[in-house]
View 1 (cartoon, rainbow, N blue to C red):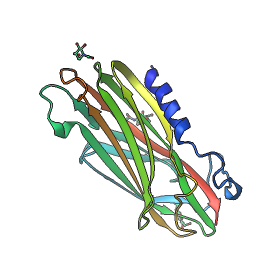
View 2 (tube, helix red, strand yellow; view 1 turned 180 degrees about the vertical axis):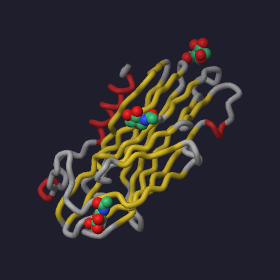
View 3 (cartoon, rainbow, N blue to C red; view 1 turned 135 degrees about the horizontal axis):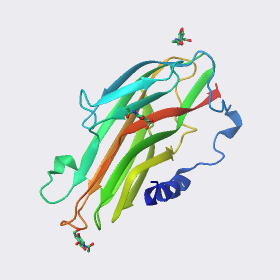
View 4 (cartoon, rainbow, N blue to C red; view 1 turned 90 degrees about the vertical axis):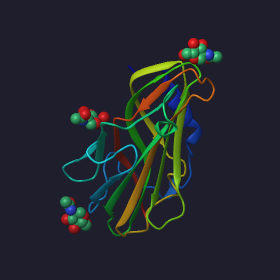
Length: 209
Ligand SMILES: *[C@@H]1O[C@H](CO)[C@@H](O)[C@H](O)[C@H]1NC(C)=O
Ligand SMILES: *[C@@H]1O[C@H](CO)[C@@H](O)[C@H](O)[C@H]1NC(C)=O
Ligand SMILES: *[C@@H]1O[C@H](CO)[C@@H](O)[C@H](O)[C@H]1NC(C)=O
């Protein structure tokens, strides 16, 4: 089930880790969060998630969200239009932040599947930023075929997770932009696709401020 893309993504993850940065101020709420935090609104918009193809599930205390997609797929190959090569979806989360706290996004879990002919490359990228801030934190990974995965699961940590944080103690808007892309430019006769079937954002990282 999980095969080569997982180990590739793990390698990419190592490259993105920023050990030690800001650790002294970080307070870990392992698997949890400070009281007063919750998600107050959700917007879903993009070429990968047109109306009617995405839906979300909030957990009961509104502290994490999973978005499922039925038509978030990028493909490339002979006869496939360039517009199908890349797809993206932006999640816009209204977030209630308790006084004295700030948070960043440690990582995002995403699921999907892929099938890549020889020389065809698929990539995933996510960026998150808070409304009104210029700083964005990226995470990305890629794999080149031949490869197939019925179901991949990956967890990409964000670069700068410790420095891109919400304004201190005020409610904010968190934008998470996820994109998938397939290129067959190295072998025009080959084809491939990658899909995203779900994204989950349970992994916020809290600190005092
Ligand atoms: C969300 O947090 C706000 C601010 O702390 C609080 O007033 C509200 O009741 C919370 N909502 C839920 C559903 O927990
Ligand atoms: C939505 O995605 C989650 C996480 O991948 C998965 O566990 C769940 O089964 C999906 N729901 C549906 C209806 O596909
Ligand atoms: C290009 O793709 C075709 C069709 O999948 C395959 O037969 C061929 O071996 C590939 N060529 C290279 C150089 O990978």
